[in-house]
Structure formats: C-alpha cells, structure tokens
Length: 95
Figure 1: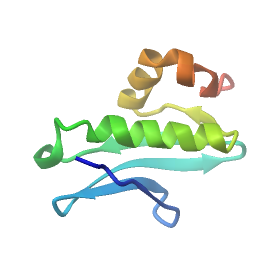
Figure 2 (figure 1 turned 60 degrees about the horizontal axis):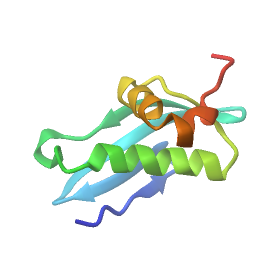
Figure 3 (figure 1 turned 60 degrees about the vertical axis):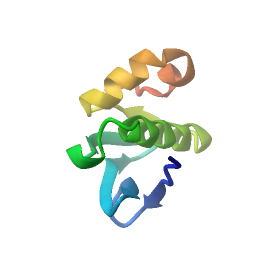
Figure 4 (figure 1 turned 120 degrees about the vertical axis):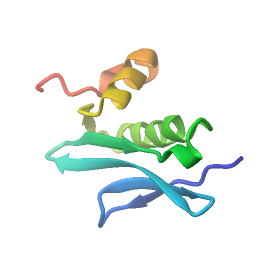
C-alpha cells in the first residue's frame, strides 16, 4: 500500500487519505521550527504504518528545511527517540 502524504499549509497538517479516511500530523509553526502537537490516525486505517509514515514524512520535511522540532505529541516523541540517529538532532533543545 502506497501512502501519499500532502502538506496542507492552511490547516497546518501533513495528511493522507486512505479509503476515504484522513490521518494527519498537526503542527504549530514557530520561528525556526515546528511544534508537532498531534498525530491522528482513526482506528479504521490504523495498524498499517500510517502514523509512522506521517511522522517520518514530517520529520524529513523539517530536516530538509532546516527546522527544529518540538515533539509535543507523545507518539512523535517516542518515534524520535526510536530513530535518534536520524532525527535526534532535530529536537529543539530550547524547549
């Protein structure tokens, strides 16, 4: 299953639609970074790696755009700890 993720700037989300159901990572921008506040994946599309794909895409976006990240969402915090080699340097130490 290919997961296509789009950046909805107006809604401040990275989102995907699978079988008509939307999953997303929500953020609040701040000077030099993104506060990643929520990862939402409804149960009907859960268990397929959707949350991980959304978070990875979001963190890659931050990396490519030299943005720091505040992982307010517990899922994102755990993901960043799990993949510390790839994303540990993104965490905003001035939290």
